[in-house]
Amino acid sequence: MPRGRPCPLCGVSMIHRHCKYVCPEHGVIYDCSDTFY
Image 1 (cartoon, rainbow, N blue to C red):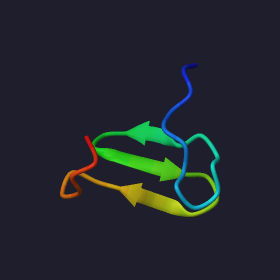
Image 2: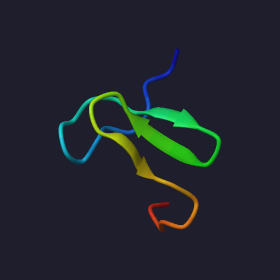
Image 3: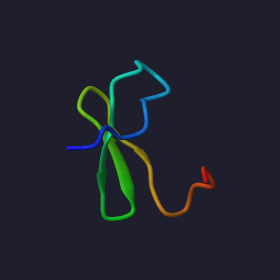
Image 4: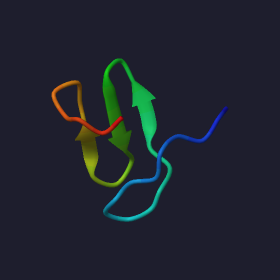
């Protein structure tokens, strides 16, 4: 399983789910409305 983007709060690899990046520690960090590309 490829590692996702690191969480900006804790550095843990985030899970990419439909239009969202989810950190296991902090929950959803980014979604479609954020400009992070």
